[in-house]
Length: 260
Length: 159
Image (cartoon, rainbow over all chains, first blue to last red; front, side, top):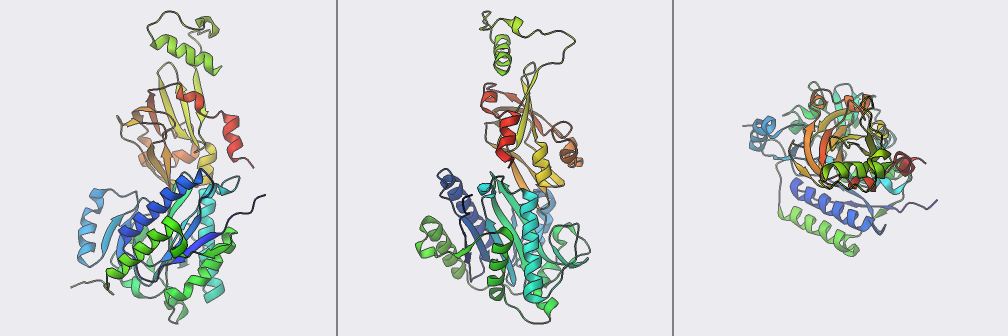
């Protein structure tokens, strides 16, 4: 049985604008589709934070979102509709976002979607337990819960031709919490957002969790994880560097929602 | 069997009286059901083509619904849209994963299964019957030949 190639991962140190990152995902997806014909495509894991943004999935219509869009942009966040599963959620500094861009059909048989999501959930759960001693409670809802009303991580994925985009988001510091409090996230009315810092009683930064998550990802998906060097990664690398430049040029971001 | 059906379809739609195969190969008796051909794609779509109406009912396979999990939302194409084989025509969402559906054949969408708006679970309970997604009037019935038979389809995912 042929060995699966490693997953190349890259961690962006500066919070990224959401829409530009969507374009990067799309670009990588197209590169993968084209290279797949000669089986020379790579599986990628992007790890990052976003600048404050609320995003909705495919289920809600433009009409339904109209009022929300106006309200949320007025408190200082971006607003975007994404083609992923799941409903309204928040991304921002202090939250680790992961975009695994994988080809589920590398194995025969291909990894099923339910299985893919299940592994993603388990990866986050096992990371929280092993590195932080944080236990989760099982839930009927997709995502990771600390108790029935506290959600620490969300999942929302898109699959096209067995290639994945979007992924997971895990709250690390308290910074996202006040932003989450402005909405009903994921359609779950009584649920509030939790984070590692609060659950731990100790300050943890996003950059601290990256190595552990990379490890957990490799373990759960049975893959070697290899760091990507954008300077020597062709078109893919150039796109990554361009986005990082954009992110730096965007300057400072709002630390808390502007509620006056 | 498939080529005989295809010939019969052409014989009817074309005004030429000389059909390549004699119509007696298929004995159409009034009490028989119309002949429906089911073909599959690697992307887990099924199209059940009724050569009498020229319509193909598109759905996802039982294997697909199993591997998706509980379906919570189905995005369907607009009635009247012209689609080409391979175009994205909708999506199925389950457990926070939105999975795109592609047109297995080219043509015009004549009907969509509105029941799925209120009961997306139909896709899990009856993926190839009550959970049909849409009906396409095929512009090129010969595209059916290029699709997979049930055996070939199963071979793509069975270990």
